[in-house]
Length: 93
Image (cartoon, rainbow, N blue to C red; front, side, top):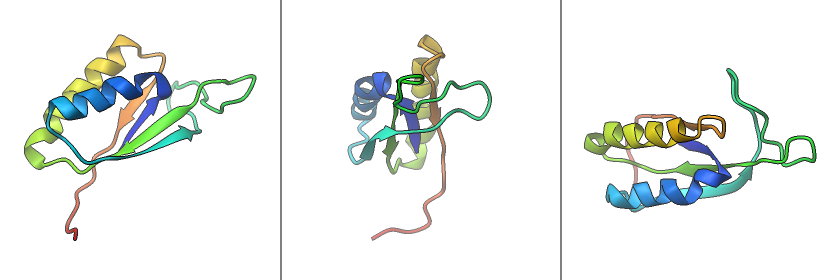
C-alpha cells in the first residue's frame, strides 16, 4: 500500500512500470495526515493538498527495490509525503 501526495502519482506509476510491476489499483483524493510530522491533506481551503493511494501486489524479489525507489522519491520532496506499507499476502485467486 502506497500513500502519496497527488504530485507524486505519475512518477510512482512510472516506477512500478520500470520494475515490471503491472497490476495495481489506485484511489484518488484520499484524505488524512501523517502520524509524525506530516501536514494534513484534507482538500480544504486551509489544507488544499490531497493524497492518492495505490495498492499493488509485488513479488518478494522486487519489494526492497520498490521501497528503495519510493524512498528516493520521498527524499526529493519530503514535505509532500510518501509512505509505503508492506503486508504478506498468503493466498489469492
